[in-house]
Image 1 (tube, rainbow, N blue to C red):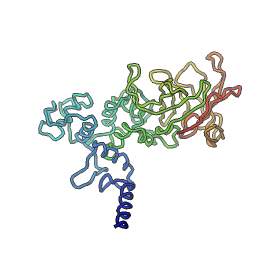
Image 2: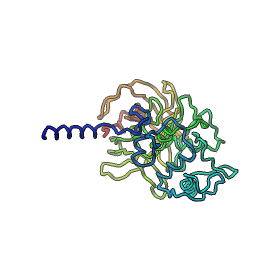
Image 3: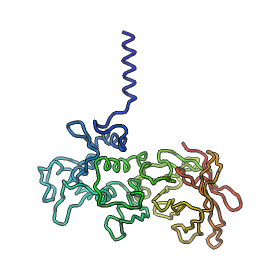
Length: 359
């Protein structure tokens, strides 16, 4: 009996250690396995009666709103919608009516919603930029989007929120249809920092949003924590990096934005600075987003930089030219992939900022 008990205990521990399959057709090797599981556990995503999830199947406008309805805990009771092609008898009528009332969705000029149409990446951008608090925009430069397009600003918002980053060839492909797996990933990134880490460009300089970063600066010790702040002083924020001092008093909220063209650091509703431009190459020069500052220039790459946290061997050296007119005495800072700025040194050799811990 004792031996049987030990075996049963071992099997129980083993079963708890093994990952829970999202569905019979979503193996652990699937690109969006974790995101799909996350949404299933939150009862936002549900599968089919046969036990499948069908992640490669295109998601319809009705299915997308049903998922949003579960997230927002809308009343899904069937009801009139105001759309001529979504009668009260439609399975998604409750979610569609609630989403329309919340101004998350709109129909077409002819009064239809077209619930069975597949949702496109452009429609996804509209929907998620309204669903999540995203008051900021990334300066995107997608070749297939123009500033006069209605979807231009929503795309900038979801890029800023690390929900998507487009394609490596600098296209967004607004008319491309979205699969159930892809939509699950977009939703999960809007909700959970760890999933935002996957919505970055290759060779990204963004920091890991699941970790805290501690710096020794000219103003004292600073801790940077990525967290969700609905609003501050009456202004909406969403996910931001909150900077606190050694006494854990809040100093300021900050933003870290990246596109295929640049890496930017700044403060919500205030100034921002382009810290790095892409592609990274020696001689590349630019002004920050604040025009009353001195120019910056990449003066070296593959630099070895020592910090209290660790020694980096792949830093990019950026030099800010001295300019007394703008109270700039000149300084150099060092950027590292996955860590952002790790050290800053004034022209007289004074270290004004350096990374001391990642927790």
